[in-house]
Structures are given as structure tokens and as C-alpha cells.
Image (tube, rainbow, N blue to C red; front, side):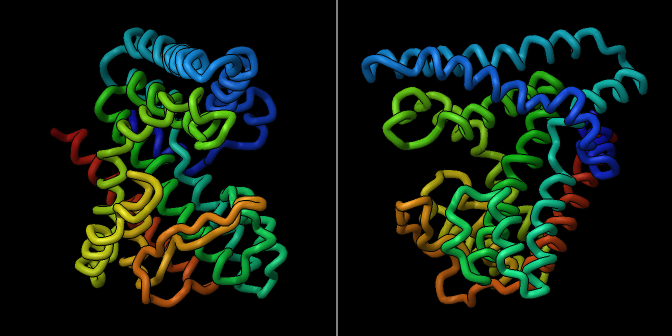
Length: 307
């Protein structure tokens, strides 16, 4: 099912017509999360922590129960695999991630910094107005590395482990983390359970993604592994540092570092410090590495199918 879902996504992505007609499962979960957060994120810190945990449970169940029901209804054999693959398809953002980064690469290579800033604003939370050419390239490569883990490797991993319930539950948890798992006054208590749960479910996929980045760049595999092991823990996230550090080592570039979120300056550590900053052409190299990782992933899932 995961292999079929990946293949459909490579060919079609998530078409605009379908999005305009029914939206997307992640947006459905996002709207439900927003409704519950508006109603329940109030009162004392203890109450907000409790209601945030309840919100997390409700949203995960909203994804898990229908997925488990559909899994039970699927027949064994090719028809069941095909239907399951179609149902898994919107939860694997393989093509979308590539297209978003390519949309940054094109204007950046033409020297259109403003156009590149507008494109990168679609995939990162930092203030694009503060980014120079190297900053835009760095932000795009970091997003590609992190979202390869969160948007593709992790959903496929949990889909292989748990079928439709596994991939649906993962996407619910990841959506919750992106919406309420922030360390600020509004969400510190309310989103704590969601953030911790997201950390747990990404432990294996994040490290697996780092290994895949190293394998996909065999000439620099040792450097990629060395940088990953040395620098991953320096990242603010317990998981995102693994794919980002592996990407930095594979490409021979430095990533992360200080960045601005609105009026706030975040003093992040460098990954692969001492290496050069990325330039416009390095986005093409990063996308090439990404495509090789996707090919390896497809081969690995295909091999599992034959077991």
C-alpha cells in the first residue's frame, strides 16, 4: 500500500482541483485542532495542559478510527492493496516537497532574490525579508532535510509498520505538533503532550532519514555520518538535527545557525561549522540527493513487499 501511495504521489502530487473540491486530510485535522484549541486553551496552566492532552487524544482518534475501520474492510490481494494505496496517497508528500524547493531554486539561480524569498516563505517560518542568497538557500535545504523525515520517511515507516492506522495516526500527531507544539506563552502547556508525542514517533524515522542521506551520497557517506553523529544533538530539536546534519555533511555545507523569527533572533548552533554557506546551485544538488533517497526508499519498501 505504501509503495502504491508513493507511486501515485510521484505522478500526481495532490492536484489543485482535488484540493479545491475536498481540501486535504491534513487540513481537515488542522481545522478540527483549531476548533478545539480555541475552545479549550484557556484557564490555568494545569487545565491547559490537561485539555491539550485531551485535544491530542481526540485528534489522533479522529484519524485512527476511520483508518482502522477501512483497513479492516480492505480485502486481501491486489484490489485491497490498490485501494489502500489510494487512501495512503494524500498522506505522503513526496512530490510536494520537491516542487516547493524547486520553486525556490529557479528564481534563486536567476538572481531573483525577492522571488526566491516569496517562494521560501511557503516552506519555512523564519522572516524571509532578513535572508540573503545564502540564507534562502540554507533555509530551503534545511526544510528539505527535515521534511523528508517528517513528510515522507516517517509516514511511510509508520505505514509499513501499522498500515493505514499507522500512517493516519502519525499524520495526526505531526499535524498537532505543527499547530500547537510551540514553545511560547500560548502553547507551552496546551501543546506539550502533542510536542512530546511527536518527538517519540520521529525518533526512528529521523535517524533513518539521516542514514539514507548518507547512503544516497556514497562519495561523501563517511563525512555525512561523521557530521550527523557529531552535530545532530546541537540542533534545538531532538530529531530534526539528524537529517539536517546528514544533509550538511553529504553536501559539504554548513546549515542551521542564527535566524530571525519575526522580531526574535534565535541563536541556533551551526551544523558542519567551518564548511561554506550554500549557494543557488546547491539547491539543485540537494534536490538530486533527495531524489536518490526517494529511489532508495522505494526499493527498500519494494524489497519488504517481497519478504
